[in-house]
Image (cartoon, rainbow, N blue to C red; front, side, top):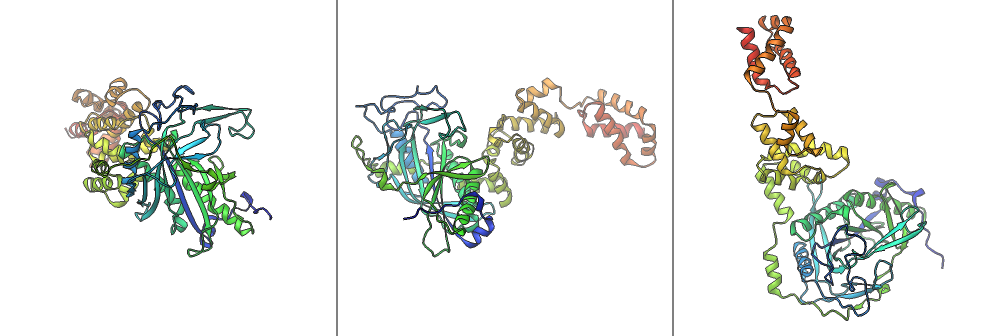
Amino acid sequence: MSQPHDVTSPSVQDYEDAVRRYDPVLGIEVHVELGTASKMFDGAPQTFGAEPNTAVTPVSLGLPGALPVVNAAAVEYAIRIGLALNCEIAETCRFARKNYFYPDVPKNFQTSQYDEPIAFDGHLDVELEDGEIFRVEIERAHMEEDAGKNTHVGGSGRIHGAEYSLVDYNRAGIPLVEIVTKPIVGARERAPEVARAYVSALRDIFRSLGVSEARMERGNVRADVNVSLRDSADAAFGTRTETKNVNSFRSIERAVRHEISRQAGVLDAGGSITQETRHWHEDTGVTSPGRVKSDAEDYRYFPEPDLVPLAPSREWVEQIRAGLPELPSVRRRRLQAEWELSDAEMRDLVNAGATELVEATVAAGATPAAARKWWMGELARTAKSDGVALEDLPVRPEHIAELQSLVDDGRLNDKLARQALAGVLAGEGSPEEVVTARGLEIVSDDGALEAAVDEAIAANPDVVEKIRGGKVQAAGALVGAVMKATRGQADAGKVREIIFSRVEG
């Protein structure tokens, strides 16, 4: 039998043309690291950035005779996630061994859940950029443990061409919940946007539930994105590829878009899609082949003999449900009403990742309008320029509330406030400390302002004559001269009053 023909990047098709001729089908598997104090099956601590192979126990390392014990907090976190995703919570479930060899899995199997997940049959409604709601059906959310971390030294940083590899088992055994969607159909040309919005909504839910820091740059949340194409919405599903470990919203959207275009090119050239894993390359915006994708039976799942089945009581599940916090979608609707924002204004906040920052700034004493102005204006421009997320800027909501208070009290104008903010971003301290150190406060002392006005009048007799001749707008030149002399720190309103009192007097 001939091998399937796979055509790659030379025949990548135009995206708009690809989605006109093919119907994309998605499947997304999201892994979230749970923020428990210890690992899934042993007491080793979760410590990000620890020295390699120091946060381990015999269980983490898969040593003979080391027996696992289930982390009760991880089970509770998994139930929280399942309830937030409108899932059924299993009355009984069990762990299984997923058998495969990787050097970063010291036991040669991963303890996971297979045919009996803790949560199943849910859904999540996600809001797209134009306000449309798209429902993503959830097949299951199951518990498992993370693998360790391989570091390939030399070459490109991948295993091919590396001089040698190092293995760190600190991450091995960290509790995960994997959330698997049912096939996502009907998105058509918006498939990349749906994928991005779905993972973004999940990240927000994880944070609101308090089950994970959900920092994608640290690998707390990782997405495997399955893409296939079919000829029409009523045709059978095509062969899928799985792009592994995509860890930013932008990359998820780009990876889906690229795979749709690439697969369309393969099919148009008369080839067939290989069921395989693929790697996403952020620098070039393309995927490359990984390994032929295994099916479930290839992993030889069987029940984990060292762990008893779990049977969360209905009373416990209902207690957890009653204790769930306000979920992000509900909170956004409430905040939109409280802040009197239009749908478009609220979407802008959400898309910028500024909702929680504005909320915290309002809680610290600023008005919603002022909080939005700073986070969506000066700070958004700074974040874009620096290539970082808003939340990663070195400024806290309390700083912004304090900065706005200085403006409201008349101690700073907008120009001086921006200078003070630059000092905060540079690590010079709080807004009050920066204002004091830089001498930024508005000059409102009448004596100092009168002296500056007198100097401006003496230096500009022609402007004075114009004002006396009825050209009131000419006073702007004198105001400008005073502002320049005081390095922008004069109270412009007072300056104007003094100018007219002098000229008309």
